[in-house]
Amino acid sequence: MISADHLQKIASWSHDLKNDEIERARKGIVEKSYPAGAYICHRGDRLDSWTGVSSGLIKLGTVSKTGKAVTLAGLREGGWFGEGTLLKNEPRQYDLVALRDTTMAFMNNATFFWLFEHSAAFNRYLVRQFNERLGQFIALVEYDRMLDATARVARNIAWLFNPVLYRNLGRHLQISQEELGALSGVSRQAANQSLKVLEQARLLRVEHGGITVVDLEGLSRYGE
DNA sequence: GCATTAACAGCCG
DNA sequence: CGGCTGTTAATGC
Image (cartoon, rainbow, N blue to C red):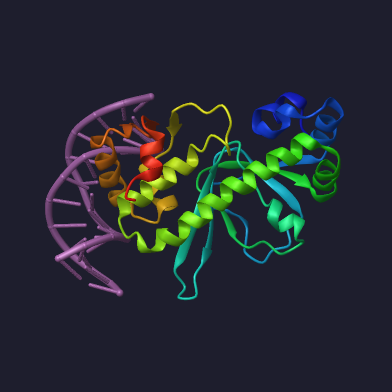
């Protein structure tokens, strides 16, 4: 169980909940920490809880038929995932890997379904999140053909700054070029070059160990 | 060829 | 000092 203050910090969806719903939520959540590089779960695992990132950064990916690792999306602090798997009672479709030291939050199945049944605010959040994710996955179809590394980096950054998935975001994110490369499926050096191109295009600013977004819309459209 | 890995000096905190 | 960055050289598909 976690404190109400902490819940507020790690779960933007809790902000609109009623008091009794918040109580349920915080009692149904436990946290667990993982070192950088650790697998949080493997594809095919039965993990019957809804999962959020309390702190850190994770990669959501899978392995293609040819054995090539494919990254579907990154999730940063405040991101929640796995509602589809829970609602359909399916095994996990993806691997979750911690890109840096990370603390995860797990909401147990019963609590998730209680909120699903009782809270209108919670359902609004889920619908918005589904809709946003759908957009991301549609973009993935084009992603494969889009061989340009810079466009992939740009899109992954834009996803990390998605205002629907993460509320009240600043423009700055502490993330190394290596982590950005791991998310985008390119080497650190390629990520470095791509960042320079994006900086030249005035879409973001490159800093030491981080970036600041200047033009989020431009980033999400880059390479179209 | 092109992108990735390797290697390393320089820089930042 | 440790981690991140920027660049060049070697390597692999």
